[in-house]
Length: 286
Image (cartoon, rainbow, N blue to C red):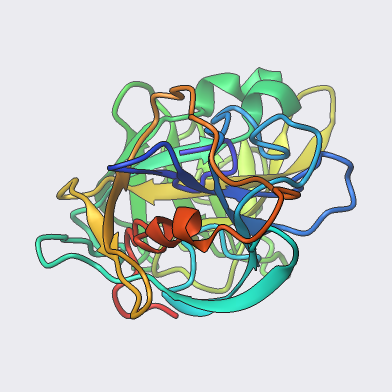
């Protein structure tokens, strides 16, 4: 995973990568997108993950969805002299198992950009939470496996019925009998919150308000990743491409050069193997 909480992937047969980038040149005005690139992404970054200061890559798909690339969609592909709109299909191999629901058997890992944006909460990054049961409202609650940190749903965090419902990260354990102010402090005091009308499960990926100390609350993207039951590889195929198998990767190995934005002349024979993209977790998703 990268700092945005998005998965990234590496081709099994080549040094090619598929990852999510908030701003591909780091200039602050770029679009969020999924990228196919020969350069390995820096997992500690949310922007310009290949650290080249430019938007150089094989292909892109603009998207606000960090959970995964689209199963079938139009990508812009660099063909040596121009960008060409091409439909790419991402298909799962038969031995891939993934369930993206959040039920009571879940173990969740919290991923946020705390290291640089909110150092006071750096210890929370990668905390693993285990399902504990349900509160009086019927919502699930979770506890960290390594510390006394809790995640729960509070319809009214101060007990005032005019307050907004929210998911909360807190060092106080929630009451299992109270319907509001579950930590019993009469205030909305906690590490972080994500307002939500859905008490059935915490959001997989969402903006949270995080208390970074000194009265400063910061908007931060936090992803809750369900730890997979099975880790395996996935393949993607195209009617015009050679099938290639990809698998999740995080070793940051140095990729070899292939096709770059601005390369002289169309080189489709170099790019076609990339259509065998690792399609991860996308059963039933578009």
